[in-house]
Figure (cartoon, rainbow, N blue to C red):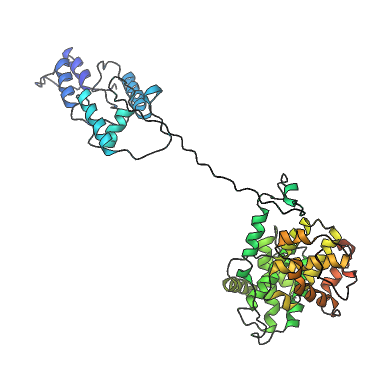
Length: 436
């Protein structure tokens, strides 16, 4: 059935055909002229649709309804989107003055009084500015202002004369992140005080320093058995110390604390962490799965969920690289640092960056290497004389006779994979008076 409109009704009735089935209708048939006049009066009070009027009431030639609808839709889209020179491109949205909007609206009503406008000033402004009919438009010119925000990059800090600029040499290596490595390690040093462990052993009723050393030795064995990253080991030891500094722990639960800390550390640093059952196995099934899960929730709530610790291992690796030490020397420093994890006095009330720098200095002293003083002082922030106390503590630690239950670290670094650095002779004294 074809579409019925007012005009088609008028045409059909004028021909004597009644398509609506009405008989002898006395309703007067308005002529086409009168219908157009009435619709034109009605259009003054009608609100304009956003996409144009989709009816054919305002069309001049309603004979082809489909083409008229298509043309009106096309015209409505042109009015809404805008094409060619009549559209205004604004790079940055700014607040429009209400007086300008009112003035544009008044001028539009004066130039085109027959065009119906909406009561909303924004709609009137949109229809006027974006209209594709340039004959009835009020041209509003706006200057396109391009705002450029320039962020000045601070000048790169260069080391003093006589100090190797290691980051400049590796500037083009994306693996080194040399552009911001100085800021990264400054951030690590600034966060050391947040995770500094205070002396807690006097507050523990059942745990001793020897028991803690045995636990750390067992954690090293776990790290070696599961082939975990060294960062995982240092994170686990740090988390264990922070937990023991805040909670009383029975001696039968000490291994559970260490295993839970290692489990959490694996989730932080490992790509594929071991399963919970693996940790229950290395504990010789001394604890149940529920106990381990409960301890994990408790430990995270006690130590806090911020486990991004400033690890001494990362500092040592950085200091060894900038000083360009060989792998055997760096491995010897790593052995001293890992051995120090069992020493309670070196892990409380100390700075991780200071311990790392002292381990590297002691390793260089043991190998008889000189000329590293200015470079290490610049990148670490510690002069050699400031590291004297810590170096002497580490030297005394190495001079102690080995215990039967604390041989894991020595056995690990006695292997040829680690260049057998644990077999390096330990000197009786180390002179720190001269700046080398």
